[in-house]
Length: 342
Image (cartoon, rainbow, N blue to C red; front, side):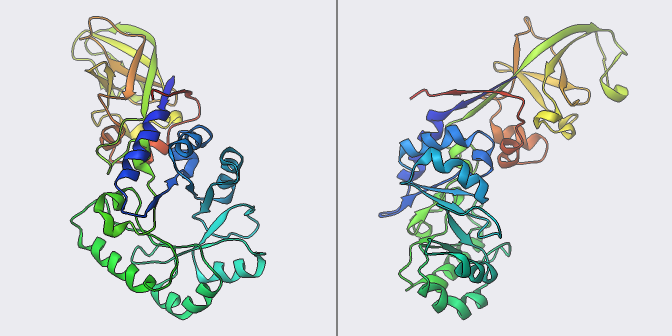
């Protein structure tokens, strides 16, 4: 099984999003979940070489994993904030609540910190009332960044974007502290959303809403067997698919243990021989997928699941999901091959 990851495309996507930034705006990079499942140890140096100096991870252990890769010059922000016992040395917690602020204040010798403010997502961050009560005390402690998160940025016409922007300005204007509101979708909304630092994530790795992103991932699955079956014969567990004609079946390596959802079977999932679609038939197993290759003149050694003919979000849409989930679900059994086509 071959998962090819184009590091030059990751770098190019960062540069394209950085080029959209407003005057004086820095562009960071969100590399949580092991760079969206693609390998932070390889993606992070490519992003740093492209110009990124501000990186966002979810937990402290993710931050510590990339700290040696980045050296001491780059900043690493931890979106989970300050969790008891987390190894925060050399990292910047994005404090997610008043409780984290008071805990951090009592244990932080003089380290940097950022503050998350909730502007309507109701997930993490200081609620507006709590921020109003503690604003002076928090600002006196010297945060390096005030941030919030848009929850409908992938729908540009959604009026909640403008409402969140207005509330973020209301809560942070006049603080003198650098600010961050825009992830990938926010970057695409325009300069008024950019403030001092943007933090694109999925767009770096070829996902929507950055429709102009260069594709990063190709996933090819080896064909391990082909066989002919007769009309009326079934394929896979439960005999879920029945041949209506004499059919050539190819079995490929890859299954739900590799992040290919079992539920995708029966929903139009396809593999690809170049630009020719090959329908998946029968149930997806833990290790294998079966498909109908009768109409192929020649069966290649590998069939593609994700690639130019089926980008990551198109693949995810088959089973009712999004590129974020499809990327981060990619299993550890794939042989990862990194290329740099710069």
